[in-house]
Image 1 (cartoon, helix red, strand yellow):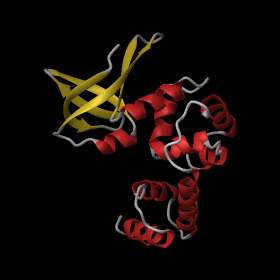
Image 2 (spheres, rainbow, N blue to C red):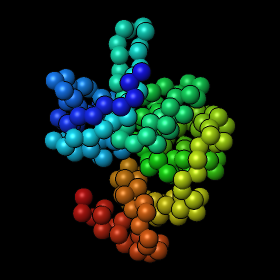
Image 3 (cartoon, one colour):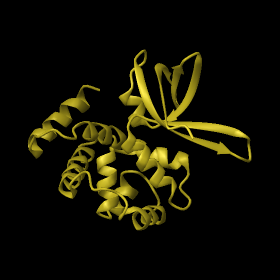
Image 4 (cartoon, rainbow, N blue to C red):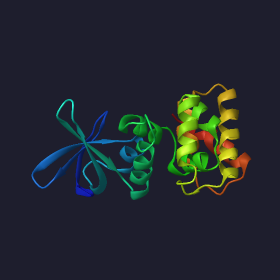
Length: 190
């Protein structure tokens, strides 16, 4: 099994990243989070997962910028009826800490509203993973972010733009009013 691969990012594609390692260029399927974490022309290490699709004889290489993202991907794919592509879509929808917090605190509404999963799938994820997922973020932070997102959406901003901006605010030590001002500034500069 391939654990990781180190190389230079040749380009970013819709599906992921082209990584040159040695004299070989690998097409690595990656989440939005990983694609944003790497820079074209820079050397990087991706933690990998190799998937053989038996019915088509294809091999898919998935790559993650952190061990934590890979571990969460593996946990998600261990859930019944969650395949690699669905797991990547889930990882691309929000930050790792928010996703872990939502699963750990059984916030099914976050998984359905923010990530877009069906209620049945979100419930299955919570039931199967809530004990396995470490609580990285506090549920208060998640609640604060959800309130901020609701406020920005009610002001007429697109849901997907709001999610990206609020995720970028993660870890900022500002109060709610300062975070709202910063989010508005970021949204207006787009």
